[in-house]
Length: 191
Image: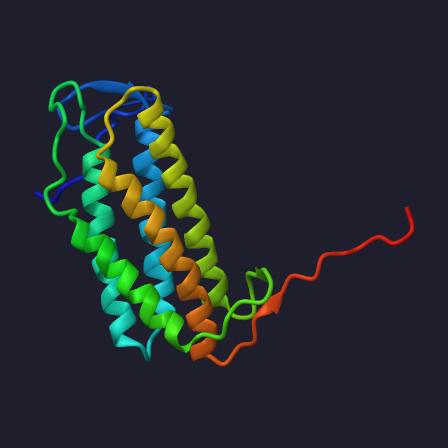
């Protein structure tokens, strides 16, 4: 018999955390790992645009794996599994992001102004992923501030990942030879 994707258990607006605790689907813990899932999907979309860059695609696949680990951690009931350790997230995962940022920055021109997202759909998608990553980070911080357990390495990883995605957006533009769009603030001379 084939596995059915629908269970009907969430029809009343509740879902279960790993550990069995039922919570409303509006719970911040659900929102946090749902946002990590959204981020993972956007990163998959970014990688789909990078057909000629196997190295970056491999890094993005690693990131997607780490995001599944983070989502699993956030989906756990901290009361039933107190201070659950994330099985695969390590300081070396953050160091990988930092090394990739440094490598990409070596070929990028220095920024002289803020830049606007755009110029190519891959660039814009990387910026969308960056924004979703920042939202995931904010939700995890909010969860932590409400005295719910969040592994500190999760917040650190999401913070560094958003930096990586910003530099990746610039790097994609460089690879595709798409000029950056500098932000030129409107100065209203007549007030």
